[in-house]
Image (cartoon, rainbow, N blue to C red; front, top):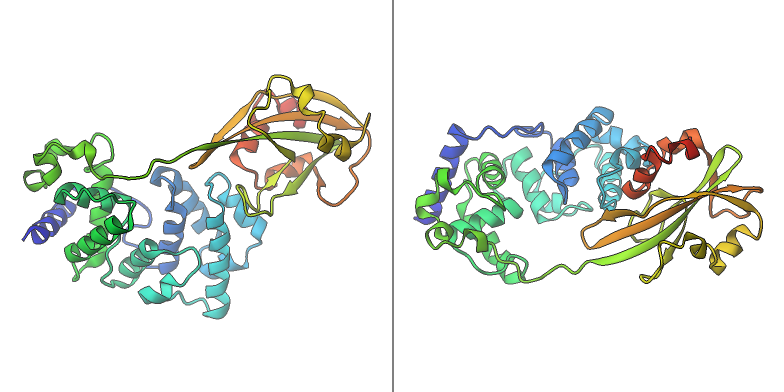
Length: 360
């Protein structure tokens, strides 16, 4: 039977050839497994490794994480993006710590009820921590199964997900689901890779439908093309005495809970070269008032590529002659900026050597 062959060859490869090392492999602590999976959602393993180690070092238990201030957690998360994951991380840590007495749920359905946990993450925790027979289905798994079994149903459709999830369950080693699930994900990461798969030395090659039919580059199939939208921001780095005005983003939008300077979103047709014209909007005059500042400099355009959009921004550095009125922004001492969690785009500006003398 093809599923039996697939499983046996995969496990043999894992025992003989798999040398992929990660700090959470073989760990049975559900907290650490959950932490690693949340960090790795929409994040490459190479990037997530350092974050995982920092989080485990700072918060050895889920109760330690639950007790930490939000700002400290967001600062550790800084640079990972998709900050809703961090918000869910905090919520779940406190729920488990306070309502479940620090005991992580130990059934698939109970794990699935946790905020920010989907079927993939629930299956990973259930199988790795508790040895429960649930197949993990991530991008690596979808790719390997699509290629080996020659499945052309688009993986981003309900039909495709249902078909491949059922297949993954049939292939699962119920006697040792943790080892099998990890082996399959590792195989997709180091052998059956998205680009340049190692077909020449693949132990599954002889029965791989994609290889036999010369369709390796065509599988898996996706039906939808991502449409990227650009967004444009003008940031005013307003300096007063020894401080810089900042605020925390609270709206359900990009960079929620992170800090930013005085900002204003602009239309797509903005002329980025004429930065003085950018400062002539009514919003700017209303905020700062006439003659209350001196322009110290302007940055080039900074860019940050997100999954569905590209964000562009320019920074205008001002010296204020009087403090801002109102509670929307707070003046933070320059030496304290490094303790706040900023979006990567703003950090790129802060860390640029050409701007360092202006801010620090």
